Amino acid sequence: MYNETKLVQGIQSDNLFEVMKEEIEEGRQHFRSRVTPEIAGTNLFERALVDILLKQRGQNVKSKIW
Image 1: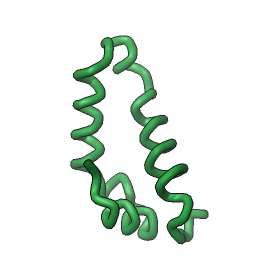
Image 2 (image 1 turned 90 degrees about the vertical axis):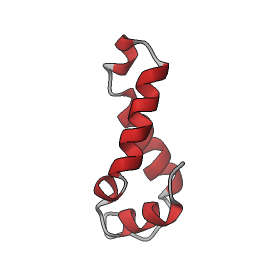
Image 3 (image 1 turned 60 degrees about the vertical axis):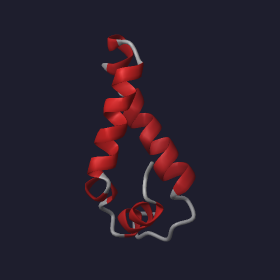
Image 4 (image 1 turned 90 degrees about the horizontal axis):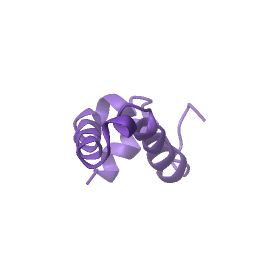
């Protein structure tokens, strides 16, 4: 589970992937453990990460990047 405060701070500071590095890597390992090697070899995890963290959760956070 991710920390909402870290998410908001990362978006506001434009360093989300640095701030949440550990959580993202934990999620990536969990994803890889649940899918086939073919799926794990795609960029599906990264696309989902952007769709969930940035598009859904981050849209209401004020940021200089949008």
